[in-house]
Length: 126
Image 1: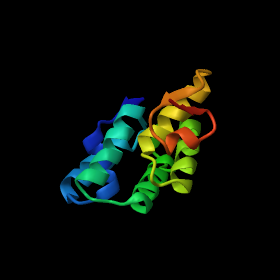
Image 2 (image 1 turned 60 degrees about the vertical axis):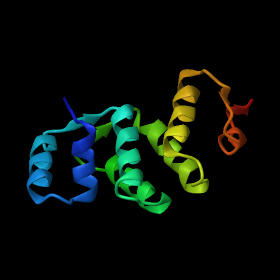
Image 3 (image 1 turned 90 degrees about the vertical axis):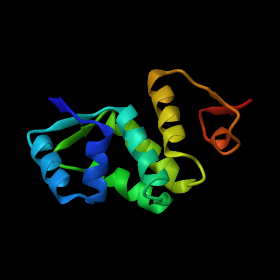
């Protein structure tokens, strides 16, 4: 299966460049894999560059998660991270994803200095 880079996900989410959107859709049509680092970078770009708020970020992640041609790395962890993020939008999506990956790997607690993240089950505020 092919893999995609951050800019491909951003084009699919924002649809802000017709030519690049078409190229991205052609590339992913046989199926494409999205690693966590690419998803996290895309979320950062959508927030920092496109100034999407938590609702927009959650909608974009959900769209990518449910996209017929995309396979997100460890989709169950992404879905669990998205659920945390929707409940506590003050948390960064990436922090939620790190917690869920640590949970899946059996490496809890996740040590953090982040007050909000430290409130989640499986995290330990230091």
